[in-house]
Image (cartoon, rainbow, N blue to C red; front, side):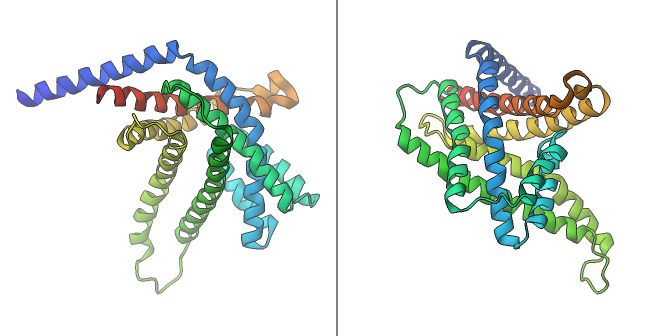
Length: 284
């Protein structure tokens, strides 16, 4: 009987959290904030990808190999638009329009603008009063972009290693292929979720909020990571079976798909932040 009461209490608590998040979603106009954030993220997307391409080309010594790995990462993160974005990046590489040192710094600065807008959005959701110092916030955003590039390169490397090991059929391996395959399946299934969790947690930490502890941010990041993976699969299914944006929008159909997906991702990220805020308030 005690267990039943405990489960009922947890159910009521979860319902109250969902109701509070839904109420704040409407009161704070999170959908409008997500639309503005999606616009700035769209503008910052190609500068960020060009920075990653430059880093991959420098590490691998070949822009073509970097473009191939980038295409695999885009296919997992941007359903419905990865092929067109990869083609655009391929055209930049083919024209040898690779950025130099000064141009790379400009791209990092441009990509950091979206982080600045995200910080403002989080300040609104977390009801942080006062103004933040522009220069300090921008320097923090630039550092976060650099860390994001390094983290994306690490995730691409880990995914590539798992893919290579999954196709190994060489003899003499200590673990046979039959024993190794279940481990690789588990790693392939949990790695994207873990990457998403760390990404959202790092994004939430860009804004100093003393009233929100790390465990509160972690709860919001868990929701955002799981929600983003579900949204990604649902959006891919929708594009494959129902939507036909090219017939309606013509040549700009890919842009509409990309903007819509960025908007959905922004909503997931902001709702995760709102969940962390509600959880922090309930914890006193």
